[in-house]
Image 1 (cartoon, rainbow, N blue to C red):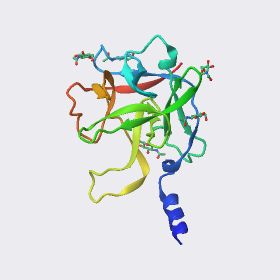
Image 2 (cartoon, rainbow, N blue to C red):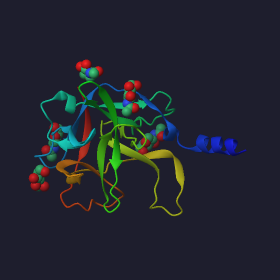
Image 3 (cartoon, rainbow, N blue to C red):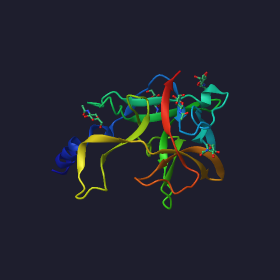
Image 4 (cartoon, rainbow, N blue to C red):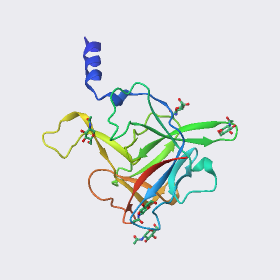
Length: 202
Ligand SMILES: *[C@@H]1O[C@H](CO)[C@@H](O)[C@H](O)[C@H]1NC(C)=O
Ligand SMILES: *[C@@H]1O[C@H](CO)[C@@H](O)[C@H](O)[C@H]1NC(C)=O
Ligand SMILES: *[C@@H]1O[C@H](CO)[C@@H](O)[C@H](O)[C@H]1NC(C)=O
Ligand SMILES: *[C@@H]1O[C@H](CO)[C@@H](O)[C@H](O)[C@H]1NC(C)=O
Ligand SMILES: *[C@@H]1O[C@H](CO)[C@@H](O)[C@H](O)[C@H]1NC(C)=O
């Protein structure tokens, strides 16, 4: 009984909740698009924020290993809205010398702020599903909106583009990094500038 209702609930959930992201894309770089000409066209590179933890810093590096990403999507995702893009994990491979560690992006949430920090971590337990839309723009999709009363889930997704470049702080490191505003309001961090993030295949 328990099992069958659990199975039913799983069947009703939008397809990508339990998806396994095992199909890598071709490699690409991530380019910042902004009204600010200083930021516009700059690369995002993986920058050290702790042991095997990297943020996405503005400016790029000369080492292609730190400017190169892939997007792991699912081989059994079902129907994908190509306008919004297929959900998957944004991957950066940590060159460990004697090993290479495929790391997925997750949003690190600080409970006292509405600014979340995208970080690459080992393991995928807390990883965040992201997509690239038909214009190559990075988004995060949601299937319910808690601003709407009564609150209801949907079987279709909406893409959100709440990306900013801000001066961020994590475990002692302060950089100009990519950040994500949680919810509809502008980020409370006064250094944040609205940006888009574009996938440019190498
Ligand atoms: C991404 O996909 C590749 C190829 O299947 C796999 O080797 C890698 O472990 C995946 N990365 C993550 C973080 O799941
Ligand atoms: C930003 O760069 C893109 C492509 O490099 C260009 O098309 C766009 O006009 C630039 N925007 C601004 C505001 O400079
Ligand atoms: C443009 O971005 C640079 C780098 O973040 C910043 O120093 C500058 O204040 C920004 N300019 C405007 C007009 O916001
Ligand atoms: C895909 O998403 C777009 C944007 O939300 C929507 O307008 C369109 O109807 C969707 N297409 C399908 C086939 O669901
Ligand atoms: C890690 O990946 C790089 C680039 O693909 C490759 O040259 C290197 O041999 C790999 N190292 C290990 C230990 O697998």
